[in-house]
Amino acid sequence: MITFWTGRRPTIWICDAWAASELLDKRAAIYASRPRMVVFSELGAGQSNMVNMYYGDRWRLHRKLTHMGVGLQQVRNYRGFQNDESKVVALDLLHEPEEYVKHFERYATSVVSIIGFGRRVAASTDPIITEVIAVMQRAAELNVPGKTFPMLMESFPFLARFPNWMAPWKHGLGQGQGRGRPFFYALAEEAATNKNSGQCYAKKLFDEAPKHSLSKMEISSLAGNLFGAGSDTSSSTLVTFVLACCAFPNALTKAREELDRIVGPHRSPTFQDEADLPYVKALMKEVLRWRSVAIIGGQPHAPIKDDHYKVLKQTTIAAPEAGNVWAIHHHEREFPDPDRFNPDRWIKGGPDSRPFPSEKGYMTFGWGRRVCSGQGLAEQGTFITVARLLWGFEIEKALDEQGNEVDVDIFDFTNGLNMRPNPFKCRITPRSPEIRATIDKEGQQALQDLSEYDGETKYRMSTYYATEKLR
Ligand code: HEM
Image 1 (cartoon, rainbow, N blue to C red):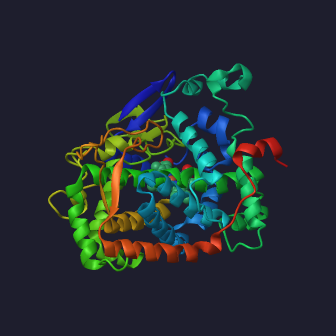
Image 2 (tube, rainbow, N blue to C red):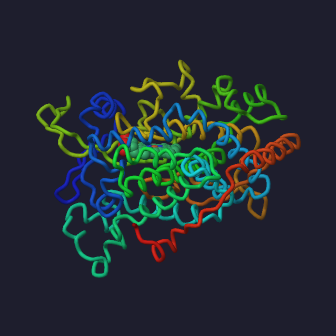
Image 3 (cartoon, protein in one colour):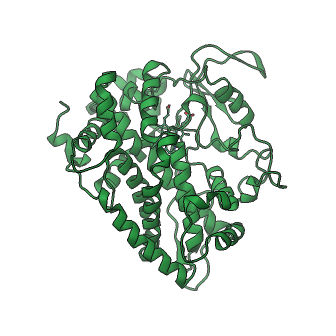
């Protein structure tokens, strides 16, 4: 555990799986709150967004409402369209393999858009991707302790009180208390009043709102979190998977053998195959560990009362705790040779497996009562897409003009709260003519089945604030 001071504010960084599990999981009742966050919370979405909320009844309510949208029971019902959207990714990769990042972003955004708003995102040029995700990525970029100048406001909160026109260090933050919020309210209201669309989370939210006196800002945050928390994270994980395939081709062999044996070329893998694909599952877990997207476990936790921890018997822990997921997932004791992508570590009882304090074996989705609300959705989506891409495609390093392989850099990642590989070229080609035909056939069918979610929103984030005022 390391204490890191930003001016006069300490943060305790937990870099060890056992300590993280002891404090954040086993003593979850204590470490369930969030610290004061000037940049991300007060200048952003504030206390009406559960991601930032202090522990208490309102947070509990938001958590319950979020579970109505993406709780474990709910997400099983989404498998049909999630699987279809993943088939569309495979189809898109046949035609535009070099645009793989865009296809993953479209897929992840479309899945949460169907859940939240009953409308799919059919093209990667949809403004929901080009505008909203860009704002979310920018927020994640700014929210790294000590990294950029805006973070100085964490140590000197008075700097946040200056009006934006005379405070370039605010980078425009704090206008209208979080640019995204009223916009997502408008999107949710549009979806909830659309008579042509079926049940969606926005409708449920509007049903629940009067019972709990939900404000517009709260509705906006609950609906917007699906995009904010669920699209960049899920798509970045898939980009990481592609990088791992290019860098460690030998690690794919056993998964491919398993897929060829269980599935064959005339259909792609389904959720029903999951139990018969333990090695593919192991490979997916290794993707989640090797380069976990939420590198410092998302937002820090904060204790709601003083606590003592064994090594520091005399020390009171009253500072926010950040789970250093990178350090935890790169500890030689749990994950020997940690930068090597090695799915064998996940084979229980095998020579490469090591004890870990939690059943899952990774801490990619955080801890205790604040654990990621979308974990079930993210895990099932990552599984089905990783399985399908391994089954369907050779994913290899790009070739230069002389036909030599171009190396990839496994450390070349973005530098924000969420990370993904910086752009790199690769070759993605169907593994056989039969598989190509299957991908094509299944992809076309999926597009037909998904057409019930076709639709347009009249709102654009870029023009919304010029034309609409929060009523
Ligand atoms: C690979 C994909 C994802 C990863 C790696 C991820 C990771 C995380 C992490 C590390 C946290 C912080 C947990 C903590 O404080 O202990 C978190 C929180 C959260 N996530 Fe995710 N997430 C993913 C996808 C999703 C999806 C798909 C959704 C919803 C559709 C979602 C919704 C949320 C929400 C609402 C919170 C805040 C929970 C709270 O503060 O109580 N996430 N996520």
